[in-house]
Length: 477
Image (cartoon, rainbow, N blue to C red; front, top):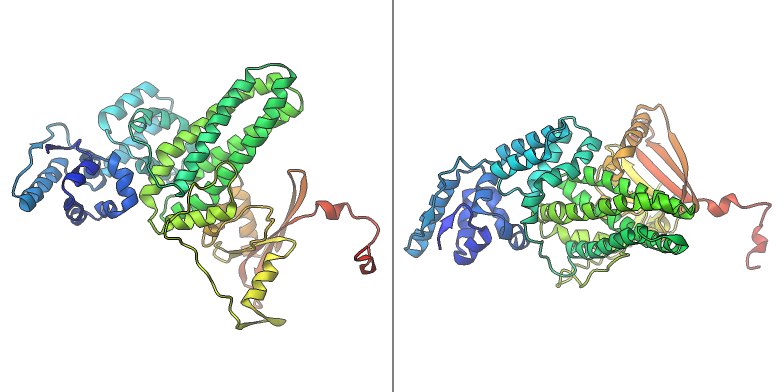
């Protein structure tokens, strides 16, 4: 086998399996190759050139070291094709170059020039590098909304390289497999949206109404699973940029869907026909960013133990477009917890843990508790929650649980509670024909010290319609 910087790691390890341990000994980042999922996805894509850049190693030296190990193990030295091109950029240099290209595009630079520079200097861009670039731009002060605007532009600049990456390959039942099954349906619905927009008459409005209802519900479920399960686990690893940017795009698509539905309800066919193509394009573009950036990066970032956690949380949130194709992992990850019979001593009574859980899950309101460090510690998992929650939210900063557009107000409420300027914040909204009452309460201990915040949400639609009185004697009538 002839080795060069363009040799795929997957091919190398098939021919020389013992190099897995050798590469891991060269640099800690190569230990990822021991991850079965990473081997099946990233390993099939990455070349030795990319590996050298990730580990900040000289490419030719890496080739020579690998060749020496092969000779030591097999007694035969492989043929080498050393690079006489300019030095391979390491990961930090690649990231800086990517950021420079994006800044130039942001300042009005030429897209074709950016593509040419990219093709010349960065051969094997990875999803994780694009994510790291977004992260640093945000940290350096570029607003999330601005990075969001750049998203389409920089994905366009990198599209050729991303298109060359093979599709991720995961087993049936894996969360990414289910996301991708969703995307096939979403893509078809987006295509139908464009077709309906080209029709005329009342029939088009009727078809559009049905299609938008299905598309809106399906996308909402798909996006909520990302926002409540996948994003929190990525944040554990310090990966926050992509989730912030994608959540902002989710909200843009949500708004466009509502606008389209409103136009259809008003009978404004021409307005719908003008909006539908851009909405369909945005939906399809999000699918592309998921498939080519988010999912490969997530598979590279999350451990094999974390993916079952994603699956369990998504099972709780439920599925609308496509259900998991199989039980996964095959060996099962179900956990049983015996209810404790020990009594918990409370201020005004005593309860078992089972009784306390029953009480909290049967309250006619949704509650969530955030501690004094702004970390989510509890939510009541009632059967008919108004706002979706899943286990991944536990331990997450509450600021990350809200879309970027509302972050300032969330922080303002928390700051007012912490400083003592306020103890309650109260809101009410209309949600799918229901009237929702939302209250936040500051929690303080006996000494007056701020210990956290309680969020209480209640559907008061029926309560607002009550009149007169109904006494307990009427029960059963």
